[in-house]
Image (cartoon, rainbow, N blue to C red; front, side, top):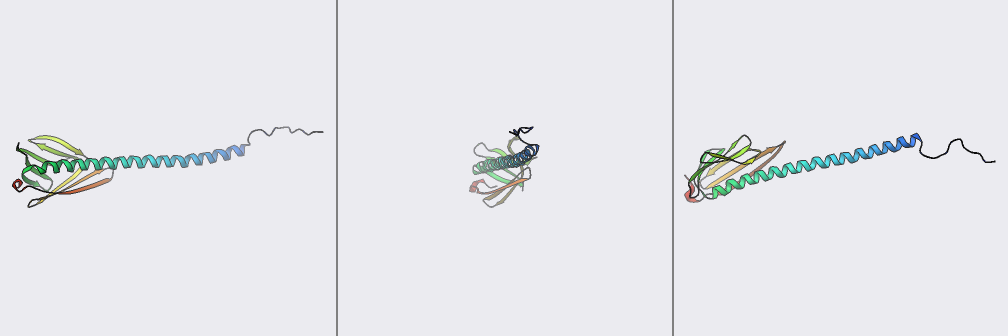
Length: 154
């Protein structure tokens, strides 16, 4: 005589399902944390790149103008004034809010954003420029020197 079980052994027990779900939740949680960290690092990297691009563009603009400048004057440590090339337009560079401003004949043009400080020092024909940019607790400082033409100093 064959004995027949009252229940078939098809499917999973409740314990097996709970253990599987627990393992699945742990694996998905770990995967989510990796994704979250990856997205955060991507955002931070993009912010750093943007900040560095802004500060390089700001420095390039100032240096390009100073190469052709006449009558270079330091108004103060944070503002420089000169006459531009053959046009002799008066140009100033300074910070307003968090923007580097290029002021040509009282026509203000923002050059770069997130710029929090600019310092100029001048010794004879050497001008040292230091620009500081900040965004979301990230700070970048860029320094450069430029030697002025002998006829450009006032």
